[in-house]
Amino acid sequence: MTIAQQFEQKGIDKGRQEGREEVRLDIARNMLKDGMDRDFVMKMTGLAEEDLKQIRD
Image (cartoon, rainbow, N blue to C red; front, side, top):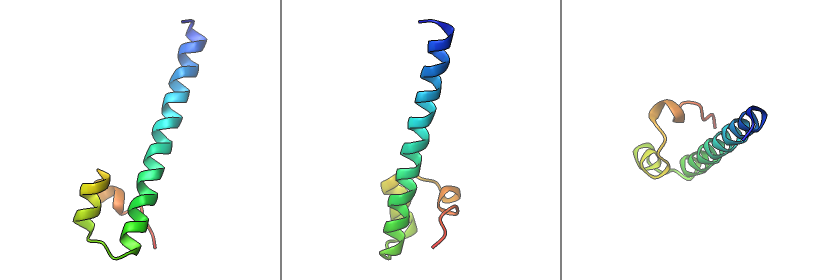
């Protein structure tokens, strides 16, 4: 794999990771809107309390 291909792959991997994180935040946002307990939401999504603080209703 060339250096350019390695950089391209790193960019693709980073984009996928950021996308997965955004999906987890969306799921947590919906769960909280439905009245679910924050501890339960953290357990099910794997998010930390600091991550949930990003969510604004």
